[in-house]
Image 1 (cartoon, one colour):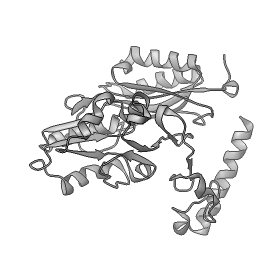
Image 2: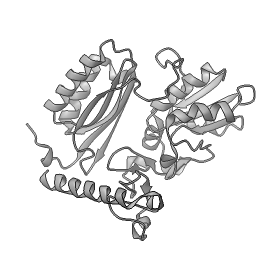
Image 3: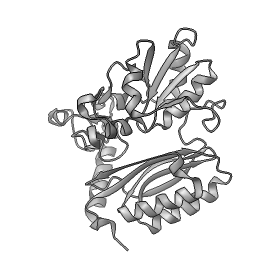
Image 4: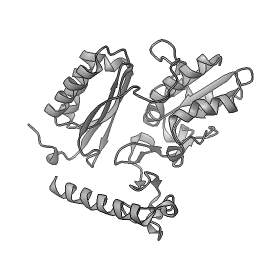
Length: 302
């Protein structure tokens, strides 16, 4: 069996599928066992509505795990996006039970029954250049801070559950006839489009495979994407061709940082940055310092 510490290049799989799971607790157990047997790290969320997460391992380990998930849940009918990482993206494997695989708290929303119109990456530019289309970024503000599509509306949400509030206050189905949405890999747009259809919006489109698919498929010279795409692992972000971006993460507030931000007096590795320094108490800083020391010891042991 290949040991994780010997892996030079990590194969990463970002995946999701909305599919009915009758016994999520049983599914959780067998999926975790498969992941452990294949030395997979990352996080998978299991709910009655489906599966969502990002995992990493050897190419063989990832292939075995995806093959199992396809047999159990037909994951390849959903979205599976592969990329590489030179660093270990996650410390360990976590397979968690959740009420929703992406939390929206809108019980009328059911992406297994109704979603908006999928738009392939190759057709996305034409759609968002339509003057009658408004384009929404369904991600949160700390994600949009390092990149978004040119001309996109940023709702400035802190968590995804605020998206419905934004739509209710800022948009009108009688005026906003055509709405195009995008997110990192596509999952939030599935729920967002289902929600908007339930609210009377008629023409709702979303980018199939999300930003990651677009950055992989569309040449940089033809792209309407500006900046980097935030990721929920140690890579922090990727650029065109899914090349790892130079961004780092503040482990105090989880906000992405430019390399120049590390030179500011407000930055202390594992503790604070310009975005959170003024809101941290001395006790909180001490707690973060202790946590950072523990992480360092753990990394040295791996």
